[in-house]
Length: 279
Length: 226
Image (cartoon, rainbow over all chains, first blue to last red; front, side, top):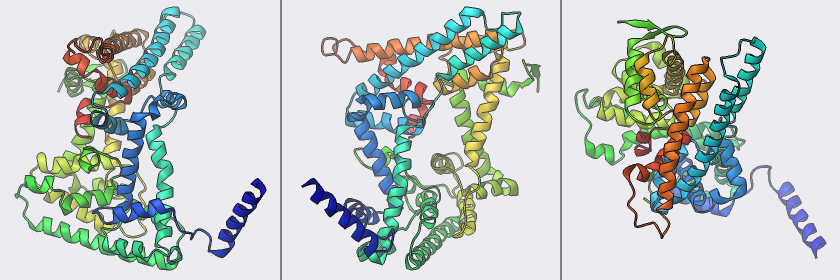
């Protein structure tokens, strides 16, 4: 039975390799569904998907991810999450769990580890007097030893949430380009992309680096040119308003075209409560 | 403006003032100084910096600002200047330059400004804490403060050469982390159903957020604007 299954998979893989141009196969169905959802909404669809992935990662992290032994080791190497993701975690924790208990327990453990290593540094300083020795050789050895102890408090590995996003970005961007290819058989995605706000500039740059047919390249270039022209038109309106006119609070909170310009230039891939989700 | 001799160079009174203000505001003072430097860069840019070709060239080479500083920029543009036109003009220029072949060649200028100021702040701390040539008042304030975040403690300990200063920084850090750990452990203990009726002090209530800020290296204010 195992041999039959194996030969079946090999046959399918060979058929895939020989039947279609390389790299132009249909991306996974769940992602296509996510693309459709994101393309219906304003702003860059890839930014939206990455923000959702960020939120998903933090939710799983809060519920169970942080209790896994291997994850704890990783978190010790990275000293928890980076500043950006820990900010998001602090905002998400009360919504998901309500009390800060999960995050508090994790960071209590990390703080204990940091205190233990700091105690080693202090013991090292006590042992030989960092600047006290008159013998240069000993002092240099002592200094090296102290710096080695201090370096145990430094981050050795990147934030696991950043790492997860770094790995997910090429998967999503490649799938997006594939979904636009005529060979993928997804004309709806093409139509929705043409009707959407288009990609932000960082994602446009990322997509341009990927292999794609001439047709898709032309489609993306035309759409993004239109997008840039639309953004410039919004800016022209802003410039004509007059220099002394204050910003209205309503516009600021309603995320008008103006805020979209900033997001379109910088990209916006980190989840934050105002974006939606559980808050 | 007066200046005094530090361990390795001159410390400007303005730097001393900024350090004193940062020590009085709670949380890691270096995080605060770096955050303010990034924000000041944006404010000065909106007020006048964009008129300078070099500043604009740096922004253009970076393809604008990073996501975090773009958010700050949007907020500052409306709140501190009451003028959205400067920002509109700046981004208008940027969009004019962004053709299909544009590739950013440098990092976010505001991040660079913050990182430069962070390095300068740590060097200033090294000089200010020097037992012979430093500032006695600031040493006292630092000793009574809440210490540095993990990142900045490591960075400060790496640049401090004087043994007594290093001893002082590690002592302050041990005391600050000890107090934070006590608050956090009490907070966690009072989550147990047997002790949940015991009231939590404000320090215990905020301890889990302060622990995250200390380990991840950020200011509490940044959590509010995440």
